[in-house]
Length: 113
Image 1 (cartoon, helix red, strand yellow):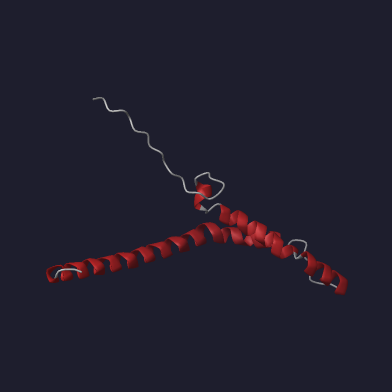
Image 2 (spheres, rainbow, N blue to C red):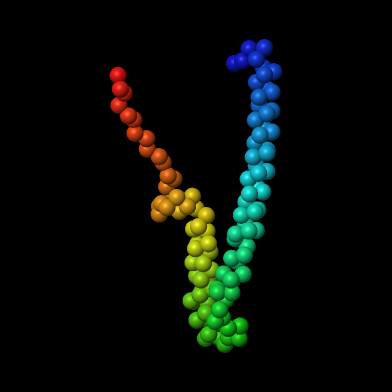
């Protein structure tokens, strides 16, 4: 596939790509940790407080069955978590409701010749 003279160059380039991929993964991991620590974590405590509001921990059999059927905490958490995560979705940050990515259209000008 490659000439013998090209093999060492190709291997060097592959090593550089592997190093670049490793640095990219590290930068992405750091960015995700910062995103969570600075933006998401501060929203978790109020989110959980809201999910567990009006929850009684002393229930008789009927109230327990009713609470289990309503599953109010899980539903509240699902709605609240979606509202937190929606702000991070790519499409929403560009103002698109369906999650599509924004694409620019360019118009060509007629030539002057």
